Image 1: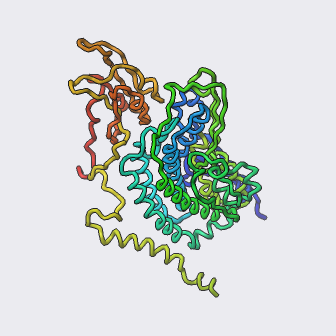
Image 2: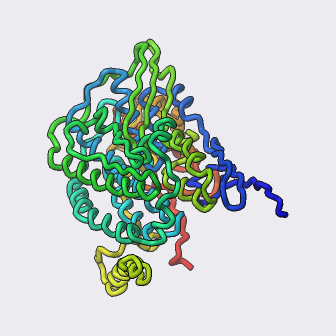
Image 3: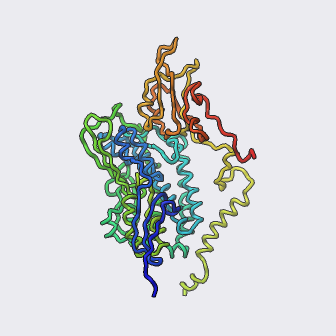
Length: 366
Length: 167
């Protein structure tokens, strides 16, 4: 009697809930998604190729512009990959400052995720509160390195400058109020019936699928796999820090929300430890004027807020440029889970699936 | 029983509304007082925004006490710039031993404000100032140079006189 025809529609690339310029090709049977393919590449700038044509020192500014919500974490990965390539040891004080700023960046990234994810699903209040706290972190970025979003925070071999005077006061003020702010968000969302209906059991991804797809970060940890590079392969000063890796086993959107909220608590804990145990000393190692690589290749992975960000660098003898540069972007690989999460679900839930993956298209397209 | 009660009485919504109400009351009853920490917005065009001391704004050439340009054309900034926005032409000036920049062109539309040029300068002859209102209407306004060539690089950029207060 009724014709059972499938309809094909495009979500994006200019849709506000796709977090940038992601286009998702959907085939619908009524309201159920039967086929889902993300189309990427609208923001491709060729960052990897640009870096190959520039010196090791200059390359850092392009890493800011990949994942612009967590620029400091990208800077850290780039700087550490280069230090590995050239065999530079970074002073201990610089390591501590790097760890602290990286954790602040994780807070900023998770706050922007919370704000936009809740906004997509329909909880508008938390958007404003999360951006209020993020503002403080961006002010700290500005105080340390002079820029709020595209930080270019670190240098190969350490830091450009020490912490500015009065930075400790800013950190103390932030840490004093942040736990109560987190409680506020949880009061708004945790028991909210609309939030629970929109997230519990939505966009499930089992641990087997997540490992098979190479998913990292909070999405993997919400499936019950306690894999965190800060614990597994400690870098910067994480080996000396005392923190837990929060995991859940439900593997749905609500579990990922809880994992990220717990991660914010742990980040605040790491920042406190960095402040308490901040060693004195120089912040920059002694470097040659021009960095020239030997024939050598390096892969260095760090735990960015979105997952494992890896930098693959190949040096060429006598050259100041990398011969090959490749980024393992967490957003790019996490996005491959979208068909698995969305297919078989309702079209309204794909917005939750995109939000919970915490993608930034600047990093996916590079 | 508990579940039915929870479904019938919207505790969760009341909890959320109480948070919103608390914040509303805090701001509403302290609205006209100064230095209240609850206010997080600033009335930007009327109240000038402040930046931190390390803020990276527009590139500026510096002069020494005698009014001489400090730049000696070592071309370090030109080489290190990731987007190649600086072009320097070397020249000579009478009564000056060091080379003198005849042209120092700065294409601001491509500048990414990374401060690598300032870091590379061994003579402290350039800084990034605290100017952050850098928007302009014409593309020509973004090519900044020395005197006589486009905008003057020693002065701060002229700020547009459009604000809500003017209307």
